[in-house]
Image (cartoon, rainbow, N blue to C red; front, side, top):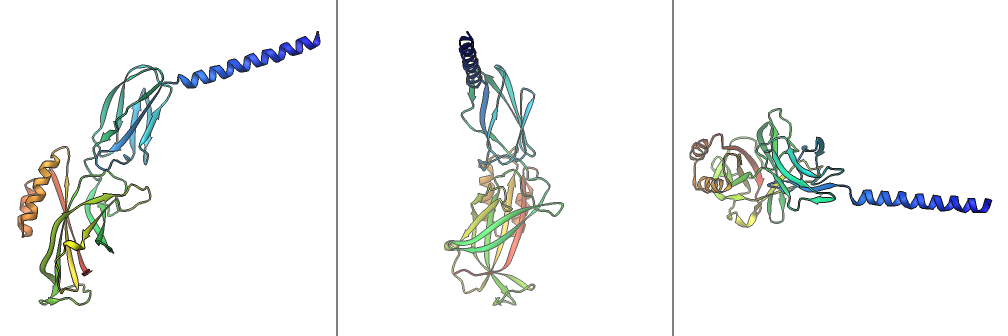
Length: 278
């Protein structure tokens, strides 16, 4: 009799364990979820400090692109996405029981680098030219590191560096001027999304495009055009860049760009004493 009771207890425990495992597997199989990818519209990388709301719950994003809500209720919902200095989005979604996936990435468009005052540019030699590392600086004089990726346009002019009408033969702090222009063009940039990066934008002035010269040092002048995508389209910015490249004088350039005030911001910087790379 005791042996029978012992077996009954074993059978009961096994049955309960099977039921528990079944309930657990069933809960995993039928958890209602929503997965999606959120990226910057220009860089196709993370959106800094994104705030994503669904069913009165919030996920905050920093350096990630993939997101997932779990334990959702089936039905029509609204996915609300905001981030500092980005155009916010509200997206209607129909949640079905089980796994839900938004197949295409959600693109968020940045419109401003916060508190931007100016850019500073640092140069270094690379095999194919002069590398530019570009840092936005805020009005508080501090570097702005995590910010929307804006479709900035960078125009570079390279000139001979002269002093008293002759080529500069060693770096000098004052009295220099510009001689013959050796290069003028828009250059393409790349975006570094690594969290520890302090220079998000970088570009290369190609040495192959710079005219030959006897000058030992160059002057690099930079014009950075920053469009507000809410107010001007990329196609029109293309025309602005094309027009600016046709101007020879600074006054012509600034007078023209001032006509786009509120739609385009522009910034300048200069590198003196750049060792010529021939």
